[in-house]
Amino acid sequence: MSDEKVLKKEKVLKDKINDASRLLQTARDEIGKRIIGQQDMVDGLLMGIITGGHILVEGVPGLAKTLMVKTVASVINADFKRIQFTPDLLPADLTGTMIYRPQTGEFVPRKGPVFTNIVLADEINRAPAKVQAALLEAMAENQVTIGDNTYRLSDPFFVMATQNPIEQEGTYQLPEAQLDRFLMKLKVDYPSPQEELAILDQLEDTSELVIRKVFNRFAIQDIKETAACIRVDESLRKYIVSIVNASRVKGRNQLPFTRYIEFGASPRASIALYNCSRVQALFEGREYVIPEDVKAVAYNVLRHRIVLSYEAEAEELSSDDVIKDILAAVTVP
Amino acid sequence: MTKKYTLLLLVLWGSAFISAQEYQQLNIRFLPPDYYVGDTVELQFTLRSSGNLNLLPPETLPDPGWVKLLSFKIEYSGSDQIITIRFIPYYSGTRTLPPLALGDLTLRDIKIYTSSVLRSDGERELSGIRHNLLIPGTRVIGALIFSALLSLPLLFLFLFKIIRRHTGVLIRTYRLNLPYRKFIRLLKRIRQTLGNMSDKDFFSIYSGGLKNYLSTRFHLDFSALTTSEMEMVFRSSSVAEPLYLTLLNLFHRMDRVKFAGEELTSLEREGMLLEAEQISGELETWRKSHADF
Image (cartoon, rainbow over all chains, first blue to last red; front, side):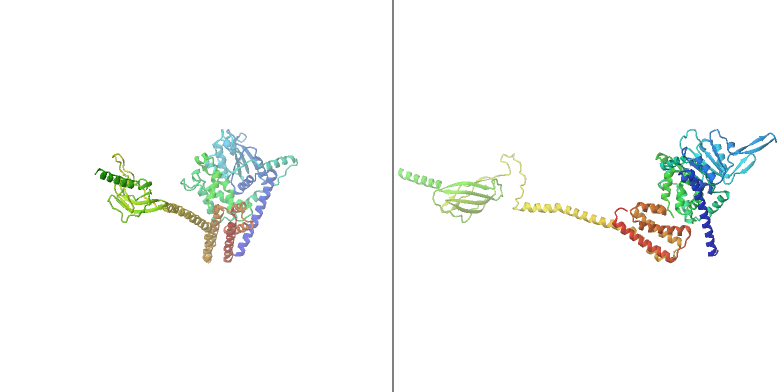
């Protein structure tokens, strides 16, 4: 390829990245009109939608999780459904079932609430394992089988599941293997006093908030394609693999954090880190990934994929503490 | 006949009376007061006589065998004579010195008592060996020698401490400056092989070396830090802003080359080497004038 063609291609990519970055910034601004603070959660949701991954959110009630998903759905012009997970929920309540139609004397499929663009699976750990498995299968396959027929789910299909870190009584913890299917696990914390004050100020304003639709399906597809063009240098790919591998190092004395890890992250974590780093670079309007992008998403990507040992629990260490140690141990290219 | 005997008796009695009344021994002193066989003893006494006696020391001192007379001295003190006899006794117990003819007078019945280390009743135990008599000033010299011997290790210890402190300072300074010297040597080595080095190798060695050098200066592992994290470290340090901004600029340029695929000419690479050399030099100057980094 001649130099001129290369330059032209680079320019086109640069323009696409600039457009995508601008669009994402507009979406952030629109969401910010309704959601005060929680920037990490906003970015996490957008990242999930762009990479085609699903997000697990952990946070106490009342942190505007539902409002956030609703707002994101509005911004990307997508359908949204909320499912409250309860102990008596059945897989069919989620995916749908065959119902008998006496008029015609045949069974017809009745699609469940997963047939939408954005699903908010509220308190996913309150439903039994079979319901969780049905949702996670839909997340992994992007399709649902009802009766003899298999139905494709909508595009985009995005699930944001929430977990309450308190009130663990009567809950069904998600198995590690199923947790791995979530692209990221976001931790939502209380807003700062200033942000909380801004929330109250917003209530004073009686005028109706108008959230502009920033994306459509095609725009999301374009952004996905643009993100896929973002350059990830070989050294960074090695860096990603090194981080994930560091979480799997065996031998208790090899690295200081090894004894805190029971099971390390799977190759799915490498893929997630790779994809999310690209989107992070896109957020920054950069056509290449730098180590900062990898580190920025590392916590959200690895948090639920690292199973801590009893020693870590005894020392009251969280996954974030261990990830911090891992990142401090891996040489940045 | 009776008159003859009476006269003879009178003469004899008179002569005896005269010799008995001739002199008196006063202030008899022995030095040392107690002495033993083999000791040199000085006997001094004052001789007082009724008449005017002309006394001369004996020409030859008698040698009875049990005592050795060393010297005999006569000194005049008014009408008295002070006699000093030095001798060494060789027998213990009380003995009388042999008569000493001093011209007009013959000294007799001078008794000396030489003590014995053995008790006469046989119950006395052997005395311990007496210390040697020291000449005046001997103790001072001894004390000085003893002090010198005692102070010698202290002197060595003092010198050792000084040497150790200075050696410690030298070693610390050497170690403190070692990373900078190593980094400069690395830059020289890169410069020598610049033509044969690929971009990847160049930046791998260059940024690795620079990060190692910074790690030693900021006491933080820079190898695991991204450029943004380095920026935070620099901002929280007391390093002058223009200095760390130049450093950051260098790292940002490296990132662009490493991750965005930008290419550098050998001239630009040479420029980066020079820049690193300059910045590290300035950083060293800064370090030397600031205790807190």
